Length: 244
Image (cartoon, rainbow, N blue to C red; front, side):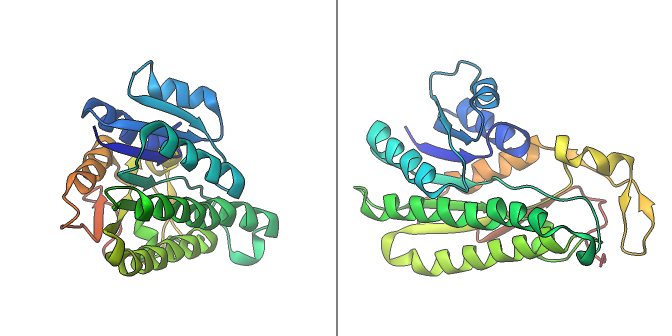
C-alpha cells in the first residue's frame, strides 16, 4: 500500500486531497497544527494517520517524519501543501510580523518538510519517493497587492527546481502544482470580489477543489521514471493569462 503525508490536511485543498487519496486506497498521514480538523478529515478511515504537527517547528517536523518511518517503514509521497495568504495591501502597509508569519509557513515550512522527506526517502529501502510542492499561479504572475504571498511562492518554485536536480541520484522526483481559484474557504472572497490589476474589485470564476485533488493523485501515481515537473490547474475563465 502506497503512503503519502499531506501538510495542511485539516481544511481546503489539503482535506480534499487527503480524502481523494484515502478513497484511492493509500495510507495517508494528515499533518496540521490542530488535531480536531485532522480527525474530521480522517472521518474514522482506518488508513488515515492523524499527525498533529506545526510545519514551522523543526523538531516537530523531524518527530512527525520519524513516526512515519517507524509506523509505516517508508514514505512514497509528500504533498507539501500547507500555506497561508494575507489581505491585499501595498508592501509598505504590511506589518513585518505578518510577513514573518507568512514566510514561516510558506517558505520555512516547505523547506523543513521537504528536508525531512528527502532524508527519509534517500535512506529507505527501496530508496526514492516523490515530493509535490503546492505552488500557485502567483508563482508565475502576481495578484495586485500580493508581494508577500507572491514572493513566497516564487521561493517554492526555486525549491522545486533544486530538489528535482538534487533528487536524481537518489530516485527522488519533485514536481509542483500551481493552483488557480479552487473553491475553498480561503478562496471564497473571489466569488464576492477581489482586487484586479487595474485596481477594480471584481468577482472571479472558481472551480471545484476536487479537480485539484484529482490532479495531485495523478502526479503521485506516476512511476518514479516519470514526473510532472509543473502543472497548472485553474478555473478556465479566471484572469490569469494576461493578468498583471
